[in-house]
Every structure is written in structure tokens, then in C-alpha cells.
Length: 333
Image 1 (cartoon, rainbow, N blue to C red):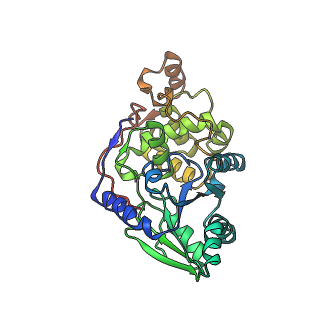
Image 2 (image 1 turned 90 degrees about the vertical axis):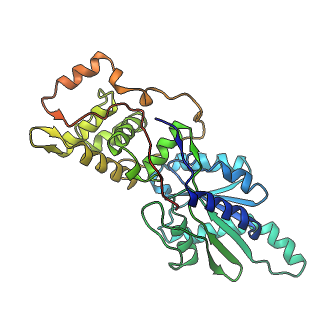
Image 3 (image 1 turned 135 degrees about the vertical axis):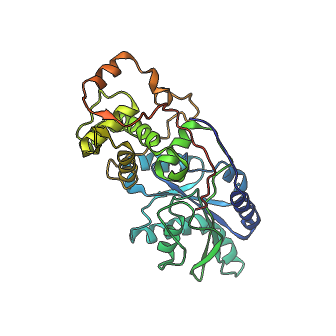
């Protein structure tokens, strides 16, 4: 997978906006997708927000496992940041999130109260595209005050949302960073939909996702796509297996791999394959790419033997499993 080098004008503008407005807030609420907490954390944020109260929301936590969510919460707390697992689409989110915000701001509010001032806590809600910032704000506010969508690029400017007489939230555009040079984390962002599919090779992306899921949760993956098995050792074989499982076969016996790829991505993102995170606190995110990022055309002879057992042809090849992310990316939320 090649390094992504880009920094569209709106992203540079969004970063300047965050830097300009950080002085207006007491707290930063960082929303991350529970399936990829490290990939979702913009490294620019540490410098921007170093002197502010911090909260991390593991959003979409129902798409990860309870054990993994707990491990990440403990990891963030060890670094001095309060964290909680939430599902912003659920009503119970409001009470839990407000309790965490109040607990984090408690000391600062107390100091102001001792001076006779009823402090209004102002918090900036930040995150990369498509992690659910606006959905979170609407849940906390109790009404639809922030624009939402199921794709990156919905929030395009800052907007203040009054939650109560003592809490105001600032919604901000999603901010990625100019160079996605960690191949593993870039893949994770693509898997969860924080990079728009229309700038990606979706067949290659879905094949790589299948390969990774076969390492993480093989039983759940095979239960979802009955024709898969653990002897399928390359990404392209697994995508073929999905097409066989769902009957995605075109005239002439050719696999409809594009349709299969889109089904895999849609079902993974909707949590229909497995509730499991792609990342764990003990992972080495700077390790060299392993076989899942190698060129599948160099797979050994046994892989070819497995493929020869099928008399159904495949339309094209996924080709290299080195996912190439190219083109201009235009997502802000």
C-alpha cells in the first residue's frame, strides 16, 4: 500500500480553525471509532490540545467487543485521559456522556464556584471523518442540531450547540492529516469508511479486509460467508469465496467481485460480520507490513492448487494486496 500524500485546502482550513478556536474552550472531546482507536487519532491533536481537559469517546462501541473496549479505556486512562465506550445512536449515551464530561470538568468548575462564578463549560468535539461527531452532539443535546450522515464530509464548518445553561459544544469538521504513511493504520481508516470509497479500489480493499478478518475472527467470518475456509490463504481467494457464498456469478461463470466487495464493506461497517476491533492496545502499530500487505501474486504453489479446485472463473485479479490509495480525497467530517 502506497503512502497517501495530500492536504486539500479545506483540511488546512479546518486545522487553522481548530487552532484559532481552541482558546475558546475548556475541554476537548475526541470521538474515535472503537474498532480502530489509534488509526482514528489525528497525531496533530496532541500538540493542538495539550493544555486542555481531555475526554475520549469510543463511539460505535457495539461494533467492537466489550473486552477490547475496556482495554482501550484503561490504556487511555493510564495516559491521563478520561474515556468511555458509547453508541451515539442509543438514548443511554446522553446520561453516560454527560456524567463523564461533568466529572472531567469538576475541578475547574469548583474553582470558579469558589470565586462566585457559575462556570459555563465549553467543549470542542473533534475527530477524523465519519466517526459520528455530529450524531454524538445531537444525542447529548437531545435534538437534531448538528448535520449528520453515514459518509465522510457532512460537517463543513464549525457550529456551536447549547446543551444546557452550563454546557456548550463546538462541532468541527473532520480532520485527517496530510500524510498517511502508516500502511496498517491507513488500511483501518479505509475499512471503517473514514476515507471515501470512491478514491479507493474497493475490490482490493475488501479482499484485504477479508484477509485481516480471517486472522482476527475466522469463525464469525466463515459463519457469515459459508464458502470460506481457513485454507484460503490470499485476499483474492477470500473475495472469490464471498462471491461463491452469495451466488455473485456473472454470465460465463465469472465472479462479480465488485458486487462482492461492496457487500463485504457494507456488512463489515454495519457490524454484521463480527463485533471486533481491528486494533488492541498491545499491538505494534509501527511494525513492518506483514504478509497481508505482500504481493499476492507471489503466493506459493499450494495457493494455486486450491484455486484450481474451482471450475468458476474470476473476473480479473485483485492483483497486489498492496492497497494503493490515490486521487484527491474530499471528506471533511
